[in-house]
Length: 326
Ligand code: SF4
Image (cartoon, rainbow, N blue to C red):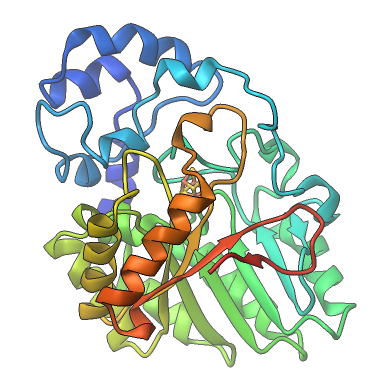
């Protein structure tokens, strides 16, 4: 039986004009969106689109996916590889930036194209494409006993089918010094049907401790079906953390960030990181000054219990750890 989440991926909207019509938006947004999507196409799944406000060009969810003219600007300091992925490559599809952890680029596919994505220019064609291709990366991990955590990333690893992921998890569990398996994914937020019993089975089915890091930037991204999907993961005993990116026009107010943190902790998902925007070409219009980010974190601290305030961090290419801003 074909899983419904795969149908949702197939039926995702790829044409700006179609998205604009579906949300009753002004038709004149279409032409700039078409031009700006040339190198990084629009891709938005329907379950996510249903959470957007109709007729509102400044909807915080829409802003994350609709290409805009500003993406074509080339301001100084914005590059194609802002976080130093290229120099962190150990082998095709395997990155190591920090000690004890290695990150597998399992696929280039995502369930959504976030316009601010720091990997929007990543050369995914050079990464492994099938379970056999992963072996080189697994061999590199096996050769380095200092690595105790494997991170499945991408793209989004959960765009792959569970059979393949279960096989990958089994092969990683066979590496004696690995202790944890972390998954970085936006799929439980974008397409909640992706949280299948097969997914929970392989995540919990090896000797490795599973950890899932999801990615929501605004409370409106979490509707009832998303909440149920997150509950299913937490109920299975999987620690679930959330990372967000501080984005102009999306979540750059204390109210938006506090609402998101409250929604997450009510669902037993811990706010983990609030990232300062990585300065990737095409995303300058999303940048929020660090001074404002610090003010926002201060307001969050005054309103929320300490566990509900994420760490405000900035990734610095080549650094041994993320720089904690607050
Ligand atoms: S889901 Fe993650 S990797 Fe994919 S486009 Fe969004 S931010 Fe980038």
